[in-house]
Image (spheres, rainbow, N blue to C red):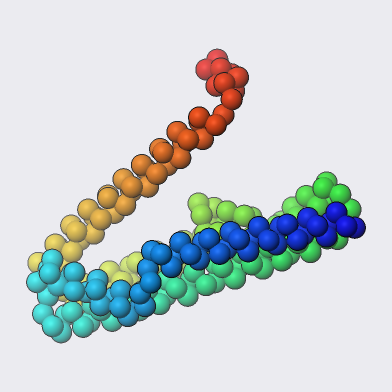
Length: 197
């Protein structure tokens, strides 16, 4: 019983530490309100696309709305992760041994009462509904921005968006490559020889 209690304490301490690090990273990336960041984004667009004052105001409102939706979605994801952690801790407490724990977790996932780890964090295993909702939001944003901009401005906006996406993908690829190299260095040499065969 003492072992289980100590394990739970360690797990809770680890989860709080990890969550604090995540929130610190989020704060470091942006210590501006959605209104401030949307205003800056609108002004950058004004410089790139030569927007009028009316267009700047409309675009700023549109980006503010988008930022609020993003913050709301992040809050929902964090809530799901916290709920999952609580459920796992409860299952761990009620389980007799590790095999029983795994069996109960698998049953919870199959029943739909709990999500798999990657899905709860919004990673590649995200479900159809969340991906569909995200794509609907993108289409809605595109339609609204098209109403605000002139055809020439909209065409330039699309070109700029494509270059931003390419740059972001390039950065992600570099991060993955760097991460892959560091994880390969950590692996022992016998595993490498087995792969070579």
